[in-house]
Image 1 (spheres, rainbow, N blue to C red):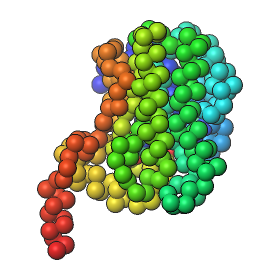
Image 2 (tube, rainbow, N blue to C red):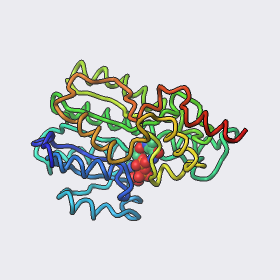
Image 3 (cartoon, protein in one colour):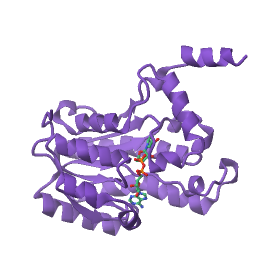
Length: 272
Ligand code: NAI
């Protein structure tokens, strides 16, 4: 049964590509909790994905915007405020892409043009979005902004490639811009560091199945699903978490604090 934690709250959700996307599940959970929102994605994703299905289901409008394009972000924020009728209470940045990962370039042989493009999409776009919202004074007091991250920002995962640096940069932007948003606008900015999840972006990482199994065996509560991530995001958008800001919040079944689990020890001993 719905808890209506987000009744009367309005926002923008970036990154719903298909029904596996974390943003898709979040849109469903936010709608269930009584929130209303505009959905947005890059023009190419709107052509390839199935977002209109989600828009219909959640009674929301879709606006195309490339998150690296400041002009398009400005238009998106203006139009969203018009559609929703006022300032925004929540924004989800659920965007990630590495051209080097997509094209199978090894970390020791990176193409720097591709690196720059992936960095712009995965990390700098968050600064562009925050700066747009900040200068337009578009966030309501006690609003909440969340971006999605991964633990490769802190630890080495060989196949995560240049996305590791992008996530470290993203998390740093949340802290740096979050300071000004907190001080001057009373708005929260946080990142959620999510378990590996089977989505289009997730599948781009080589060996994802092994990755998922390993994380599952290491996490006392098991991997967090996209639906569970969506519910956690609802809590961060709600008034129950008004003093949580500048944080990178692990949503990973406990993975981040485990040195080794008994399952991993047993599996290595079995192979002796
Ligand atoms: P997804 O592939 O469904 O979502 C990525 C989204 O980024 C897509 O909707 C895509 O169209 C959008 N995007 C790419 N370029 C864009 C641009 N220029 N402008 C606007 N949007 C653009 O995959 P997923 O997994 O739902 O990814 C969402 C977020 O979660 C990403 O930040 C990802 O790094 C993060 N994450 C994913 C994990 C996983 O294992 N799947 C684990 C931890 C974090």
